[in-house]
Image (tube, rainbow, N blue to C red; front, side):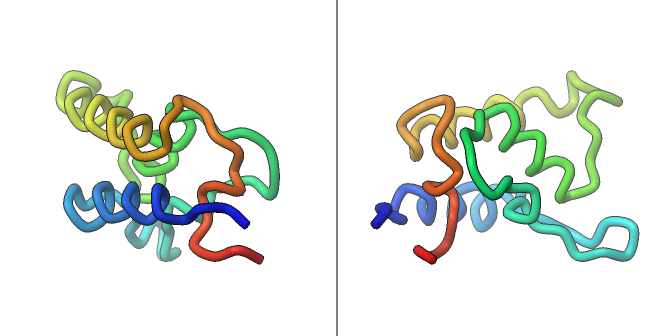
Length: 96
């Protein structure tokens, strides 16, 4: 059984406090967890990229504008998950 507290804390910070967890993109509701693979490792940069993608934002179009958000989201992931990469099993709401 995987401890879900770090993931819940991460999602609380990035979604509730920072507003990065998803939106309607091209008429489809999107959430960062929609991008998670079935298995394997997820890096901080992948996760942050998915946060932006779920909100329909391409940070490369104006990187200076988005860099502070990227940095803050990266810091949150590492702080809550304890590493710059984690097994995807740690990034889930519930054990299956």
